[in-house]
Image (cartoon, rainbow, N blue to C red; front, side, top):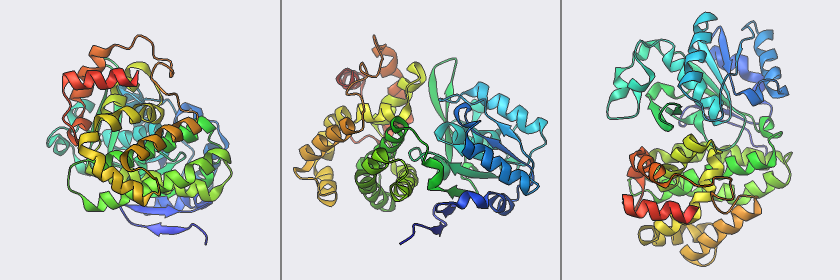
Length: 381
């Protein structure tokens, strides 16, 4: 059965191989007449990007690209993107790429019409209401990896380069108007990106599933997302041209990001400051931290992870699930520790302090304190 569909949860998603051909129509649906395509530097000259620009140009929508985007995008990238948007007289954004391109693209569409500082819109209380909602430009999102799920998210994760902290900027209108999920765009991903992004999706699903908050829709989506990663990430890793595996991983990425409306936890609370301070790949950092976080949360999650294990056909309940995670990581070339990732002499005090201030801590099933978070970080090292 061909994996092709039109979905409207949580937004309009055009899913299927070859559907990047609909990019001009997607812009029309979003009422974008002069888009700025925003992506990261690594994708700027790749064939999937130039082909997308060709499609936009052929449809009379211009050919405008902004790619000054770091792997962990920051406020400097945002300011440059906003300037490019204004200078070009653009009326919308095509956010294109992995998490960095998608997050920065959404942020530029949000900020271009605002008068307040970026940090005035951090995801704290009702700060999002400070924004002029009518001034937010429309967004078409096109993921080229299968992990972050930012294409279906209502926020962007942006690094404050001065404080080395990752901040979440939120507004309901960050949610793109139209998403094109074309698994053919992910075929060229190298193995380490396939693994890291895929395990990012898995981390989203695991943490959402274990979060103590009530959201049964997310709970079911998180569980099935775990299954898709378990079954299809090894296939996508082994054969990057396996379109069924690529499509299923694209689904899992969107599912994980939708599911974590229920909450994230200690995995992300640690990986956010580690990524900001040491510039590590986010999904890979999540994967490295996951085994220790599972043990950290065992008193609160052993039963529910046992239930997930039965659904996933993993024997041994909680302990079997933990053994699976370690073997899964190893099979995908993931380092066992942060030291093996290349982080030496980690600043434990700073990471712990930043982890405890990260909003992800509120979704962790075990309360995080300075003492137990220090032990947790040391177990990851």
